[in-house]
Amino acid sequence: MANGGIAGFFERWKSDWIDPALDYIEGGPRMGRSDSHLNHVSIEYSGEDVRAATRNFDPGTLLGSGTFGSVYKGTMVDGTEVAIKVLQVPEEAGFEEEVKVLSRFRHPNLVILMGFARHLETGGRSLIYEYLSGGDVSKRLQRSRQLSEQFLWRARLSAALDAACGLSHLHNMTPRAFHRDIKGPNILLDKNGGAKMADFGLSCVSAGAQHKVQQASGTIGYACPEYIRSGII
Image (cartoon, rainbow, N blue to C red):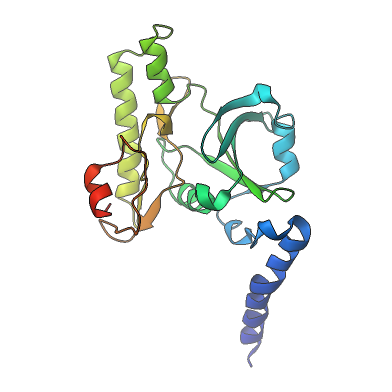
Protein backbone atom coordinates (compact mmCIF):
# COMPACT_ATOMS: atom_id res chain seq x y z
CA MET A 1 0.00 0.00 0.00
CA ALA A 2 1.35 3.44 -0.94
CA ASN A 3 2.25 5.90 1.80
CA GLY A 4 -0.74 8.11 0.88
CA GLY A 5 -3.04 5.10 1.17
CA ILE A 6 -1.70 4.21 4.61
CA ALA A 7 -2.08 7.80 5.80
CA GLY A 8 -5.62 7.91 4.47
CA PHE A 9 -6.48 4.62 6.16
CA PHE A 10 -5.26 5.80 9.57
CA GLU A 11 -7.01 9.17 9.19
CA ARG A 12 -10.33 7.44 8.48
CA TRP A 13 -9.71 5.00 11.33
CA LYS A 14 -9.04 7.89 13.75
CA SER A 15 -12.15 9.76 12.60
CA ASP A 16 -14.43 6.73 12.81
CA TRP A 17 -13.17 5.16 16.04
CA ILE A 18 -10.71 7.21 18.10
CA ASP A 19 -12.49 10.61 18.07
CA PRO A 20 -15.90 9.20 19.09
CA ALA A 21 -14.20 7.11 21.80
CA LEU A 22 -12.50 10.20 23.23
CA ASP A 23 -15.81 12.02 23.24
CA TYR A 24 -17.36 9.12 25.13
CA ILE A 25 -14.60 9.17 27.74
CA GLU A 26 -14.70 12.95 28.19
CA GLY A 27 -18.40 13.59 28.10
CA GLY A 28 -20.34 10.35 28.32
CA PRO A 29 -22.37 8.53 25.68
CA ARG A 30 -24.60 11.51 24.88
CA MET A 31 -21.68 13.34 23.32
CA GLY A 32 -21.64 11.15 20.22
CA ARG A 33 -19.22 11.97 17.43
CA SER A 34 -16.68 14.76 17.57
CA ASP A 35 -17.31 18.19 16.02
CA SER A 36 -13.77 18.22 14.64
CA HIS A 37 -15.17 18.24 11.09
CA LEU A 38 -16.54 21.74 11.80
CA ASN A 39 -13.21 23.19 12.91
CA HIS A 40 -12.16 24.02 9.36
CA VAL A 41 -15.23 26.25 8.83
CA SER A 42 -15.71 27.87 12.25
CA ILE A 43 -13.82 28.73 15.45
CA GLU A 44 -14.38 26.44 18.42
CA TYR A 45 -14.36 28.11 21.83
CA SER A 46 -14.06 26.23 25.10
CA GLY A 47 -16.94 25.70 27.48
CA GLU A 48 -14.99 27.77 30.01
CA ASP A 49 -14.93 30.70 27.53
CA VAL A 50 -18.74 30.59 27.35
CA ARG A 51 -19.18 30.34 31.13
CA ALA A 52 -16.81 33.26 31.71
CA ALA A 53 -18.56 35.39 29.07
CA THR A 54 -21.98 34.87 30.68
CA ARG A 55 -20.77 34.93 34.32
CA ASN A 56 -21.61 31.23 34.55
CA PHE A 57 -24.99 31.77 32.85
CA ASP A 58 -26.08 34.46 35.28
CA PRO A 59 -29.88 34.95 34.97
CA GLY A 60 -29.18 38.66 34.55
CA THR A 61 -27.54 37.93 31.18
CA LEU A 62 -30.51 35.95 29.83
CA LEU A 63 -31.94 37.53 26.67
CA GLY A 64 -34.67 34.98 25.99
CA SER A 65 -35.63 31.32 25.80
CA GLY A 66 -37.09 29.14 23.07
CA THR A 67 -37.99 25.56 22.25
CA PHE A 68 -34.42 24.31 21.95
CA GLY A 69 -32.51 26.48 24.39
CA SER A 70 -31.74 29.91 25.82
CA VAL A 71 -29.87 32.97 24.58
CA TYR A 72 -27.51 34.92 26.84
CA LYS A 73 -25.67 38.18 26.40
CA GLY A 74 -21.97 37.72 26.97
CA THR A 75 -18.69 39.59 26.91
CA MET A 76 -15.63 37.77 25.63
CA VAL A 77 -12.15 38.20 27.12
CA ASP A 78 -11.26 40.84 24.50
CA GLY A 79 -14.36 42.89 25.41
CA THR A 80 -16.46 41.86 22.40
CA GLU A 81 -20.18 41.72 23.18
CA VAL A 82 -21.82 38.53 21.92
CA ALA A 83 -25.11 36.65 21.99
CA ILE A 84 -24.68 33.01 23.04
CA LYS A 85 -27.38 30.48 22.18
CA VAL A 86 -27.14 27.39 24.40
CA LEU A 87 -28.66 24.26 22.79
CA GLN A 88 -29.53 21.39 25.11
CA VAL A 89 -30.39 19.01 22.23
CA PRO A 90 -28.15 20.20 19.37
CA GLU A 91 -29.27 17.58 16.85
CA GLU A 92 -32.92 18.65 17.04
CA ALA A 93 -32.01 22.34 17.08
CA GLY A 94 -30.06 22.14 13.80
CA PHE A 95 -26.70 22.98 15.37
CA GLU A 96 -24.57 21.58 12.56
CA GLU A 97 -26.73 23.08 9.80
CA GLU A 98 -26.44 26.53 11.37
CA VAL A 99 -22.65 26.34 11.68
CA LYS A 100 -22.22 25.19 8.07
CA VAL A 101 -24.60 27.74 6.52
CA LEU A 102 -23.45 30.82 8.45
CA SER A 103 -19.79 29.89 7.96
CA ARG A 104 -20.28 29.53 4.20
CA PHE A 105 -22.52 32.53 3.47
CA ARG A 106 -21.37 36.02 4.48
CA HIS A 107 -23.49 39.12 3.91
CA PRO A 108 -24.19 42.39 5.78
CA ASN A 109 -27.79 41.25 6.29
CA LEU A 110 -26.96 37.83 7.74
CA VAL A 111 -26.04 37.58 11.42
CA ILE A 112 -22.34 36.83 11.98
CA LEU A 113 -21.55 33.50 13.63
CA MET A 114 -18.31 33.97 15.55
CA GLY A 115 -17.95 30.33 16.59
CA PHE A 116 -19.32 27.47 18.65
CA ALA A 117 -18.53 25.58 21.85
CA ARG A 118 -19.11 22.09 23.21
CA HIS A 119 -20.26 21.43 26.77
CA LEU A 120 -18.75 18.08 27.64
CA GLU A 121 -20.59 17.73 30.94
CA THR A 122 -24.06 17.91 29.34
CA GLY A 123 -23.55 17.07 25.67
CA GLY A 124 -24.98 20.49 24.75
CA ARG A 125 -23.59 23.03 22.32
CA SER A 126 -23.39 26.82 22.19
CA LEU A 127 -23.50 29.08 19.14
CA ILE A 128 -21.71 32.41 19.55
CA TYR A 129 -22.98 35.34 17.47
CA GLU A 130 -22.37 39.04 17.19
CA TYR A 131 -24.60 40.92 19.63
CA LEU A 132 -27.35 43.04 18.04
CA SER A 133 -28.71 45.49 20.59
CA GLY A 134 -31.95 46.30 18.75
CA GLY A 135 -33.53 42.94 19.54
CA ASP A 136 -35.85 41.20 17.10
CA VAL A 137 -38.52 42.67 14.81
CA SER A 138 -41.37 40.87 16.59
CA LYS A 139 -40.57 42.42 19.97
CA ARG A 140 -39.99 45.81 18.34
CA LEU A 141 -43.48 45.63 16.80
CA GLN A 142 -44.93 44.65 20.17
CA ARG A 143 -43.29 47.62 21.90
CA SER A 144 -44.65 49.87 19.16
CA ARG A 145 -48.21 48.57 19.70
CA GLN A 146 -47.81 49.20 23.44
CA LEU A 147 -46.64 52.76 22.65
CA SER A 148 -43.40 52.19 24.57
CA GLU A 149 -41.09 52.63 21.54
CA GLN A 150 -41.71 54.01 18.08
CA PHE A 151 -41.29 51.80 15.02
CA LEU A 152 -42.23 54.11 12.15
CA TRP A 153 -43.06 52.94 8.65
CA ARG A 154 -39.69 53.97 7.20
CA ALA A 155 -37.85 51.86 9.79
CA ARG A 156 -40.20 48.93 9.17
CA LEU A 157 -39.72 49.12 5.41
CA SER A 158 -35.95 49.37 5.85
CA ALA A 159 -35.92 46.24 8.04
CA ALA A 160 -38.04 44.34 5.49
CA LEU A 161 -35.70 45.32 2.65
CA ASP A 162 -32.61 44.35 4.67
CA ALA A 163 -34.08 40.92 5.43
CA ALA A 164 -34.99 40.45 1.76
CA CYS A 165 -31.42 41.32 0.73
CA GLY A 166 -30.02 38.70 3.10
CA LEU A 167 -32.42 36.05 1.80
CA SER A 168 -31.73 37.01 -1.81
CA HIS A 169 -28.03 36.45 -1.19
CA LEU A 170 -28.75 32.94 0.10
CA HIS A 171 -31.08 32.14 -2.80
CA ASN A 172 -28.68 33.28 -5.52
CA MET A 173 -25.41 31.74 -4.35
CA THR A 174 -23.98 28.46 -5.62
CA PRO A 175 -25.07 26.24 -3.96
CA ARG A 176 -28.24 27.97 -2.77
CA ALA A 177 -29.43 28.05 0.82
CA PHE A 178 -33.04 28.13 2.02
CA HIS A 179 -33.80 29.50 5.49
CA ARG A 180 -37.16 27.70 6.05
CA ASP A 181 -38.19 29.71 9.14
CA ILE A 182 -38.66 33.33 8.07
CA LYS A 183 -40.51 35.30 10.76
CA GLY A 184 -40.21 38.41 12.90
CA PRO A 185 -38.38 36.74 15.83
CA ASN A 186 -35.65 35.61 13.40
CA ILE A 187 -34.97 39.12 12.04
CA LEU A 188 -32.59 40.96 14.38
CA LEU A 189 -31.88 44.69 14.52
CA ASP A 190 -28.63 46.48 15.26
CA LYS A 191 -28.45 49.75 17.19
CA ASN A 192 -29.05 51.77 14.00
CA GLY A 193 -32.09 49.75 12.90
CA GLY A 194 -30.27 47.65 10.31
CA ALA A 195 -31.76 44.15 10.03
CA LYS A 196 -30.07 40.75 9.76
CA MET A 197 -31.54 37.29 9.24
CA ALA A 198 -30.79 34.87 12.09
CA ASP A 199 -31.56 31.33 13.34
CA PHE A 200 -30.59 28.94 10.55
CA GLY A 201 -31.34 25.74 12.46
CA LEU A 202 -33.91 24.63 9.84
CA SER A 203 -31.94 25.77 6.81
CA CYS A 204 -30.82 23.53 3.98
CA VAL A 205 -28.47 23.83 1.02
CA SER A 206 -29.34 22.80 -2.52
CA ALA A 207 -27.64 22.80 -5.90
CA GLY A 208 -30.95 23.54 -7.66
CA ALA A 209 -33.47 26.38 -7.76
CA GLN A 210 -35.84 24.29 -5.63
CA HIS A 211 -35.45 21.56 -3.09
CA LYS A 212 -37.74 18.70 -2.01
CA VAL A 213 -37.75 17.86 1.71
CA GLN A 214 -39.15 14.75 3.38
CA GLN A 215 -40.86 16.79 6.08
CA ALA A 216 -41.82 20.44 5.78
CA SER A 217 -40.64 22.42 8.79
CA GLY A 218 -41.32 25.95 9.92
CA THR A 219 -43.61 27.99 12.16
CA ILE A 220 -47.37 27.78 11.71
CA GLY A 221 -48.71 31.12 10.56
CA TYR A 222 -45.44 32.07 8.90
CA ALA A 223 -44.54 29.12 6.67
CA CYS A 224 -45.59 29.31 3.02
CA PRO A 225 -48.78 27.20 2.56
CA GLU A 226 -47.61 25.89 -0.82
CA TYR A 227 -44.34 24.73 0.72
CA ILE A 228 -46.18 23.03 3.60
CA ARG A 229 -48.48 21.25 1.11
CA SER A 230 -45.82 20.11 -1.40
CA GLY A 231 -42.62 19.91 0.63
CA ILE A 232 -40.88 21.83 -2.16
CA ILE A 233 -38.89 24.94 -1.23
